[in-house]
Length: 333
Image (cartoon, helix red, strand yellow):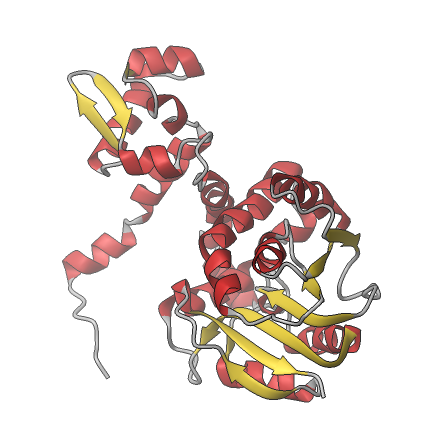
């Protein structure tokens, strides 16, 4: 087993890395990159446009320039091509919602020691209890992340012959949209909390999918799942629950499947000893901070959950996905 060569310099670099993170968060929260994507402005000009302190803004602009997110010529600043592509609110590839979601999580992460002491959360569950602004950042952030992955997943998961897909806890419906675009015969249903409906309907309209994909409102742990399906998609749903609720949720999904139906689970998957990959291991702490019983699961744990739900022909699909994500497929007898 290789061991990282930690030394004082690297340890202190890791310890202070949140400074760069917070500079990025502030730049996105203040929406600095949108005007600088199309204009070269001085700190005074931009401060006047946005109603900010020129002194504070100049310091942040210089730091963002040092991070190579901005360019500076004389006393004028402009967004780099990458910042214009991903941090300009009007750009198709905008990632600001997921960055703002990360910013909303910072306060909880600063109290990680309290969660470790108690074994329970220290912040509200964003998808359930947050205010409108936090919920928008969470749901549209999930959309932004899924847009980077869903087209590739939809192109490599064989749904030929499948007619009706359940996107359980599907949020804005990014995956079901791409599955339907890839498979013209497919129709879909997004089943999620009522507060998610406006975001889902906005996304369905954007992709002209309102005629093929419905939204059904409900709590997947408490309410019955309407309809019958030959494929169910559970993307990053199980990690929000403990094993008992995961079992209940899978039982409900399996009950909604027709015989021979396909169930697909996408998660950040830990290896058997739970010490790698790094992102799922850290993500498990994120679930500690924000949920009563959630966690990242290892592949053996996920396989046990699927088998105990009565599914068979389990396999992990051979897809290379970021951040330790993987997809397990299983079928209802």
